[in-house]
Image (cartoon, rainbow, N blue to C red; front, side, top):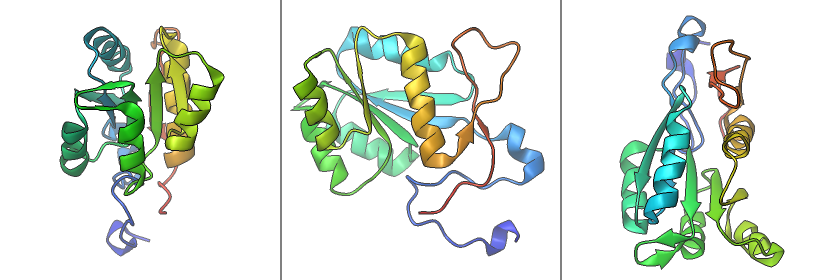
Amino acid sequence: MTLSTLPPKASPYHSLPDAQPAAMERRAPARILLVEEGEAIGQNVLNTLKKVERLDPRRVLSEEAAFDQMRAWHPQLLIVGDTLAGTTGLKFCEKLRESSTIPLIYLTPRLEMQYHIQCLNTGADDYITYPYDEPLLLGRLLCLMRRSYRYSLPPHPSAPRGAAQFKQSGRPRNE
């Protein structure tokens, strides 16, 4: 089956660009959108994501900016914090889930189990408490990407410990 005969994708949030096998290594980085107003935590997470070669992270501060970026840039995963300009992360998740099933990690300082359950029930696929460990954040992000888009991470000898690189192991699934 050639690329021109593939069926159209159902949603830009569930698919990655198709590539021929020879072009797999040159695949564009995975687009990660961080939605967090808090300056310290937002910059910290953004710096962590920038350490991974095959990620293309961006950060926005508000719900409105997040929806604008989703329409224009089509991120493949969201990381949503508790603090957003004009709303809360949980309200953003509720609104987002009305129209999208994009993979989402919720970022919170709260340790109460009941709050974590509320995050998951509101639409998060996973959550991270901060302060966080970089390898744990990246591990959960990569796990969610792997489940959603069939990504695998081969060992890379030059990668720093705890870092990972994206490499797609097959054609993305259509949903």
